[in-house]
Image (tube, rainbow, N blue to C red):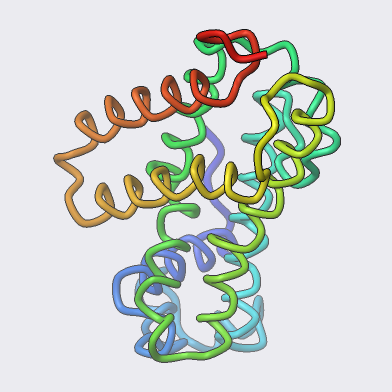
Length: 212
């Protein structure tokens, strides 16, 4: 296993500290101490805390993109992913849902970033806007486009694609927030996620329970 470079360790420790205490409560000296270096050494790699934060965001984004590529999805453009979902079965949809849920819950950067923005959303307007973009606007836009394309292709029954996106995404977001507060409820939440996806598929997919 490759050992992390000093720069990578700075990003990793900053991610953990931001998630635990919030962005505003963490200073550069504290990050350096967690890494085991002095602040002047940290400044050889980053100009300041904001640049470290930006590096955390880039790492989280890269991990998300790799995770989506692993399940052969774009994850940003619903138009690109629509053909994949035209052929997907309920069981395959459940597996994709479980893999994505596990990524957001257990990938250290994804989980820490979500916790950081949850903490800071009431203290920092910029991070509040980032929270809304990351966990509300972008997921709903992606899924709205995806469902719109599937309605047009006849794969899903005629319905308001934006409301369909809300129906699909909101329970998943809620279950993640439950697991953030109560990790012991992960098994329960995964079972609920499976039931949610199964019912969503039954309600909206054409050719299921008489839907045409």
